[in-house]
Image (cartoon, rainbow over all chains, first blue to last red; front, side, top):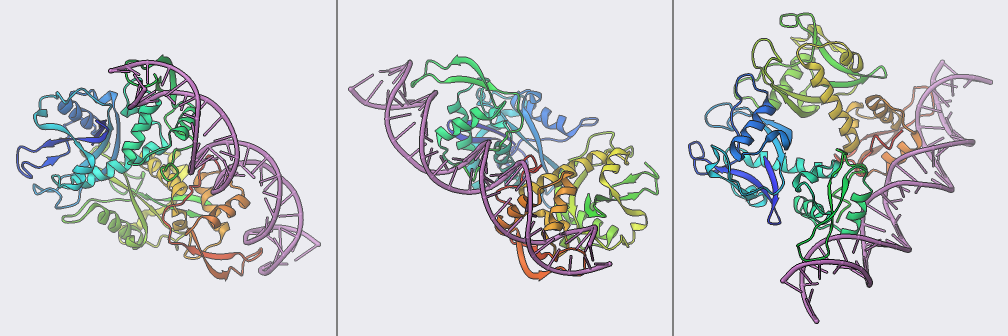
Length: 216
Length: 216
DNA sequence: ATAATAGTGTCTCTAAGACAGTATGCT
DNA sequence: AGCATACTGTCTTAGAGACACTATTAT
């Protein structure tokens, strides 16, 4: 479940299936484990094959297992889902299998029917991502290498689907130790006052947490 | 991974393996999925077979998947781990498969070698349980149907391995809406002033959370 | 009497919540 | 000039952290 923020929307990488079952339906990217390959390596490899992205550079986290009978008409298929987060990438040029891959709005995808039980998988991964934004510094994985506090705030707003007070947000992320590292640079060339550019800091967990309930 | 609090220690249900591989080693209880059975049903059924407990009455939560090659010498076995929490049960009388089942201290079990990669599975489940205590009301699952605030505090202290200020703890759990429901009864027959008996309230999530970092 | 557990109250401090105006660049 | 974004600061309030003593029972 590869998520990104693009055009002000939360998007997920989906592929149109070219073969039965669920031919023509949108589905999450994925594939089968190979011999002597760990499952996280599988996730990383499939991501690379379908997007050209170096999976080892991306945030990748196991979310859950989906193995109930009947979820795949071909038999009992065990699916292990991984959440991946990417910055706004160059258009999905893609790898060998990626002819049909594209970015779709998460909200739309949850409303329409995906192949298999992929709405459930997407929904679980989305909830995981939202929760990770509260407790970790992973929001920076949605951003480019350098970014402004405004960029980061937009990530929170878009992923959570709420609006955030910019003054409180700024205070919060600046005082959170190790969240942001000042580059000394500013962003020019765009309308508005140039913003200070940061890169992600060393901290992985966000303390204190930024709770959704509190930010309204 | 069935956890309980017993004799003031955090314990886990382990079985001594009677057959290779890892014959004689301690292992987490488990078994194989049957046809037309969901994986949570499998967890529930295995728990029943090995402890006689009605799995549908217990807290049961999926933790993760372990499927890397080499983790089981018999081939690539995919293990889905579930965390279960039980109150202090009558001695493990047990079901058909339970001849070798028993309660072991979690700390010891993590220090010694278990079969397969079961230390990792246990460690992950333990961390999940500790985290759930922060954010949910699941600590009550370690208690009997009615319990005192002292009982509940002991759960936190034992599972987290820290000591907690009883005054702050009391204030916290009483003010947390829906955590505890007063039964009106008091516990008699034990030394000390009789404590008010509570049962678990309707709330599943604990708001605000009880963060480990804060309770020292 | 003593031991053991339950229960009560206050001060401090951190950090979130609400809120408006100024600064600096682009077009 | 107008627009867009960045930045600054204060008051209030919720809730955690630290801390000591009294109350009620069993033995």
